[in-house]
Amino acid sequence: MSRAGQLQQQGNHAEAETALLNALKQAETFAPGDVRRAVTLGNLGSVCVDLGRPAQAEKFYRLSLADLEKSAGIDHPSLLQPLSSLVALYLENGQYEKAGRLQRRCLAVGRQALAANDAEAVWLLHSVAARYHAVGRYSQAEPLYRQALAELEKKYGPEDRELALLLNNLGMLCADMNRHTEAISYLERALAIWEKSLGPNHPNAARALTNLARLYCFRGRQAEAELLFQRAVAIAETSLGQENPLVGKILAEYAVLLRKTKRKAEAISLERRSQAIRESHAHEALGRHTVDAGDLRAPRDNRSGGNRFSRE
Image (tube, rainbow, N blue to C red; front, side, top):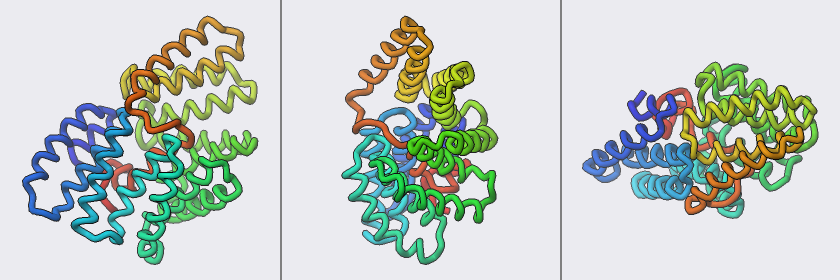
């Protein structure tokens, strides 16, 4: 595992960014066509997403894509990585038209991977499902999520880290379809996998806790929901910083619970803090957050601790 990869997995995103910027300087001295520059640019994009800087992430992903197009050609399967990263970024920020255009290109580029039963093809299915989910086409999203989940379970087993994001998004889809018991089951499974593979204080655990807390709240389990919100805030603040956009999103969700439990003053305090965080990042925003697609940007080797942008 690279030093930057270790730092990012540990939640030290600012240090990871510094290491990657130094690596990029070194990569600039390599021969034309050396893929290490594209890899480093892609990893910088991933770190910027974690740091709540989507506009910079988009810039690095597009530079990585341009490098690979120049060195490998416009139809090479290696382009799936930056293309999928951009699709995920646009989905996370509500840029559905941009996501759709790139997704069509992903499908065209991905024919070779699909024919070879490549693991990237499964994440392509997930990407398509996530876009259908984001635009409310639930009946089209569900079979694709389930197909991708079945393929990953077959390839890696039922408790592999690969499954967590799919389980999370399938749980969110079930919640959107008012199948709350099923949704909770999927989200609890995703949380357990993330906590086991990444540790209990990783940002992904905070996201899963928040999703679960929302459902618990909806089902009238407010006391349990509040404990999950408190854990999620603590994890996000510790791992990402008190002004990270994820903290703001969690605080906004927590405030909804506080209003439901007649604690208006506490809710207003959290809402103001959430708004302040959102406004501080307004210049970086690409759009509104919808579906949880963040880890679609990261192929298997990276999610298991290696270079987050290198191919399996």
